[in-house]
Length: 306
Ligand SMILES: Cc1cc2nc3c(=O)[nH]c(=O)nc-3n(C[C@H](O)[C@H](O)[C@H](O)COP(=O)(O)OP(=O)(O)OC[C@H]3O[C@@H](n4cnc5c(N)ncnc54)[C@H](O)[C@@H]3O)c2cc1C
Image 1 (cartoon, rainbow, N blue to C red):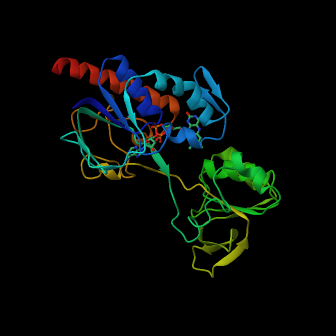
Image 2: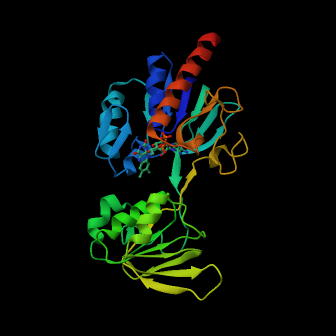
Image 3: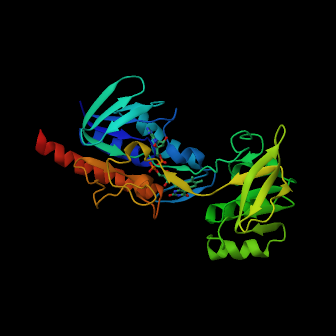
């Protein structure tokens, strides 16, 4: 029996764990990836909006903000863990390995994952023309024609970065209008390398050894057509990592966990922190703040119980 089990070792879960340790709670963190850090490990842009710390990218941020603190800390952090099922009311977790875990309080800090299109070619061409990040990979695609799928800020930002080095960028968005902020929309419209297809979807990514083209279908049911490209970048939003908790705790219409002001769910002593419960303004500072808040709330509950 642990005092606290935290699911997810992103900024939210790690901050909660550090605070729980400081408050004398027996804490276990379960992380499904092989390394802690969460989305920080996929951030290739500079992070200059966290108070007191500027880093060239997410991995450097992780190193400076968390790495040494975690090595020195005494809470248990299990990585590469596969959770089979969670019973939130009972605060019981079964792992794929067969192990059964129990805690007084559970904290869900499982974050969000990039949404996939699920179309042919998407998985097959991973590392063979699927671009993970324009910041990181654009030099590799310099001089090549590319396609960006999505219409929000992330898609627009990546398209503009690619347009600096690529002769053509084809932007495909299924909505009527791009949802990216005004500044990005204006820059996209003014950029002669860019062709924007709205109310359109990419139905297939084609190629032999690597990406060679995308197939685009206009929404009105016109005949699909192909555009030759060597790279495809997909930014169509994120989904909260909540399938394990569905039907046990209230989720909003997009699957985010609903919490109160101390990040507690409808179930007593079950909390959710960071992006998994923050559809509006997901940030590192918000995730860390939520982690600190729940640790204090749990410590005060547990001191009453003991
Ligand atoms: C490209 C990019 C740039 C960004 N730039 C900034 C920025 O400049 N400033 C800023 O403030 N924020 C930025 N962010 C957002 C920031 O990274 C997130 O808000 C923050 O990482 C959220 O932390 P979290 O701990 O809630 O979730 P996450 O970082 O998503 O961590 C969740 C963890 O839970 C684990 N997990 C999920 N499901 C399970 C499970 N079933 N079992 C065990 N573990 C599980 C995941 O593997 C992951 O490690 C950026 C994000 C991206 C993708």
